[in-house]
Image (cartoon, rainbow, N blue to C red; front, side, top):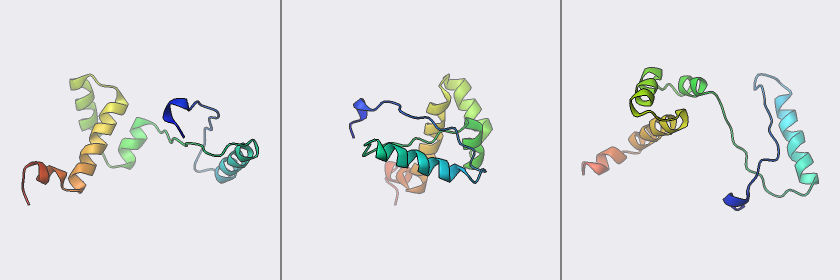
Length: 99
């Protein structure tokens, strides 16, 4: 699937606490398969506050970086998330040549 040829076909706004959500997703995917689609890309979006809270990220740190650097929410969130991933795989120590 070529990234530069993707266009939005469907948008589903789902409430994950609703039991019918899985049925709705399944039904939509089955319908698309019947229409001849072979591949789709699913992107999950959530509010920045939910993402920060659910991942135990500091809202204060997020706001401080956002205001200081004047960056969009998604850039700051990706920065915070990447920093957490790098720390988990000891990348920071490798940068310092520590073992």
